[in-house]
Amino acid sequence: MESGEGIVFYFFRFFIFNLLVFTNTVVRSQNEVMLSSVNTPIGIYIGSTETTAFDESHKYYTAFKGVAYAKPPVGKLRFRRPEPPEFKANVVYNATYHRPHCIQAQETFYYMSAFDQSEDCLYLNIFIPGNGVAGNARFPVMIYIHGGSFRVGGADVYAGDVLSTFNDVIVVTINYRLDVLGFMSSGRKHDGNYGLWDMHLAIKWVSRYIKYFGGDNTRVTLFGNSAGGAAVTFQAMFTGNRGLIHRVIAQSGTCFAPWALEKKHALYFKRIAEHSGCADEDYETVMDCLRQLKTFALQKAANFDEREFEFFPSIDGDFIVDNPMLMFNESNLNTNEAFSLFSELDFMNGITSKDGAYDLIGQNSRTSFEVADFKMYVSTAMQYIYKQTCSESVIKTVVQEYLKDTFTAIVPIASVIAFRTDVTFAFPALMASSAHSANKTIVLSGNSYVYVFDYIPSFTSNLSWLQGVSHAYELPFIFGFSEYIKTKYTSDYNSDNPLLPSHGDIEMSKIMMQLWTNFAKYGNPNSMNISEQQALPVWPQYEPTSGFYLDLNLPFTEKSIKQNYAAQRMSFIKDLKCETLHNGLCALTPMFGYIFVVLSFLFIC
Image (cartoon, rainbow, N blue to C red; front, side, top):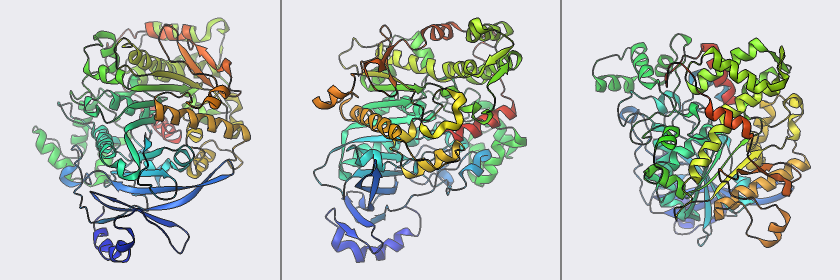
């Protein structure tokens, strides 16, 4: 709660206290917005009850926005793990409006200018079905972790009103620290990953207090897209979350993706200290200096001389004990505590059919590449994705694999997209699901499901060259075309027409919301309702041997169940190895990095 609000609400309490203090009362205000209260051991929260619409139906939902789950990470708390706020049981908290987003990466500041930003940003939003909070309600809880390359984004972009109220679940969206403030690390043990610790504290808050808002803390599902997908799988492997989360949905991103881990963090830390004037042999002296910098000065140091430093999660020996892919390849999963926890959770995981097209959207008039251009693209992409410099022979092998019999001087854009989709999203996703299902022999093993979203939205007709579904296209469908997402996707894809979902769009959204929320309720996306079971095909569990996955498209029939996604290409990537700088790093060119970051924001990586 920001300074000054306590004084305001000290007086506000006298006007509403008698009406709200020990009940979940709904009060209609003059502007027809209703106020709803929840009395908890940590305070009295005042939220709002409004109506939302989907498929020409209107329903009530109740929202509590800007709920603090941590102390403001400012001053001496900058670059430290978050601490729980100091709650007072008899204090009234205004939870009727959004708080600022966390500080964004400097080079994308312009794109987030519509949102307030602050280092005081560790807040969450709660969306509850119905008119007020029923005292005996126990809805399943879905916590959404936003994407944005761990550099940009915020909870407010993803309104959970439609998903919540039309499907009888509670949706929680959270802010977490980003970029240099969230993921800078010196390379020392237990250093960095502050954004992941933020998420963990938010999860703990939900586990402890969501029951007062009508939630069931024994059915908590994490779901996230892209960087958010990587984040929820990092959380699923963190043993401190045991008993706090029960299911995980990773959309177009997992911690198995090579881009999900940063190895150059120690070098970036040194450079930032130098460029900010904080360099010193003593670590604590450097950190004290960095904590005193103005926010803009810190951002500037992180982008010195237009050379951007990248801040992603890193191996710290605590939250992330090792590279998940290496652990999967080398460890006995039955004795690995992180994988043991992961295997116990129910896991749903998938991609879009053309996930790798996100950095080609701006070139929508281009339908092919010269072979030389494709080789350069492959080389640059491999450097970024695998963080290794690959030999000329490896690059040539990749080009030949993706051109096959069509090897000519012209490379179809479909081959470029297939390559980027496979190495960036598809292969890591299947590795994550294989790791999760590897312990099926243990009694507590969770359910495993894999999907490929391949429904082409009606509002992307200007991307007809794509012949599929690009990165993050599933989000409007999962969130039921809530208002901000509708506006955002119209803007992102440069549509000349307002985003008006077609009948097919609505039907696809209904199916996806049902699958996602069934999974949150039961650990199984298949309906428990007999009539619904007859209407929809049964989605079988994923196992590496059978390779079952669901092709999310219309018509939704038995033919939607498929096996062994891109089997030959996945086998090729599994055997692919860069031949130089073993586990080394390579520098991304500044221009490519800039383009990647901006496009990652635009399409919610």
